[in-house]
Image 1 (cartoon, one colour):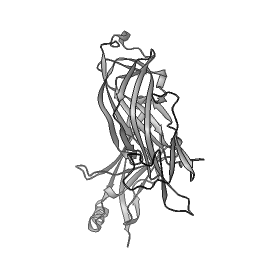
Image 2 (cartoon, helix red, strand yellow):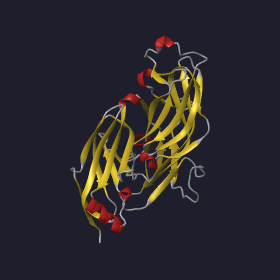
Image 3 (cartoon, rainbow, N blue to C red):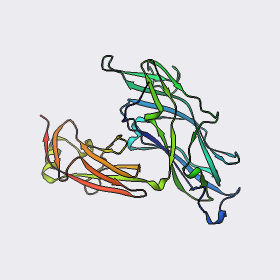
Image 4 (tube, one colour):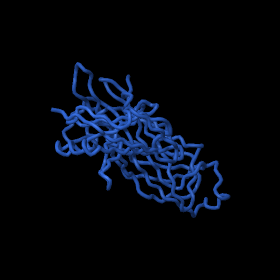
Length: 317
């Protein structure tokens, strides 16, 4: 058995609500009670990787209190391709009303999935492994090479998501963020005989997560050359690589009012990230005012920013 390669990375479920570690004080607990309510929004985020597709159907997310009371956050099935979400968010459930209280468990139910992986160099091409040949998430006409086994959770209500600090507290009227990571790299494993999905889920304190924002411009001479050749800065990509060796590629978007393009990446664990820029095939080489690859340091609760200006470029013949 082998795991998906080191670039498979993480997908993260962002749960936006009044979430506080259960051990924290909350004004004497006055906002915690059977009549209080908070809002909960679930967003799927960030699954960089070198697999061609990793699609899952999530058909349930539940919060559970210490005494066993259950609050349903998601009940309608949501089928999502994890692979293209490295630089975007997708909302699974928006502002779901959840009763105030202390929740010590979260459970996520997966009903089906498929993964498309590259074959070895001798075979070439790629193969699709699915939980069923008629899995609804498969594109029409897809040939399924083998079975993607789905590990049964220990609880029929879904896979447990470990909570930061042992639990979360939802307060009346509050709105905050909890991030749950779906570790794609560790969740999918297999070989030519078949693949298996065992969802590996963890959660993080949102205060420990940060963002990175990199601005890209071209000097006037280079911009004039790009304009004449039809080369836009939106064709360039930024790549953030952390201590996990996962390269998170993000396209530069824009322009803003100043003509600059920006690559943004949210919900990053705090730490130092290597950063590089790659250009389109129409640009064979380019230089920037600051040395590449560079480094960007991300701190929890803030956005790290840096900027680059392309000051020379060689266009492909």
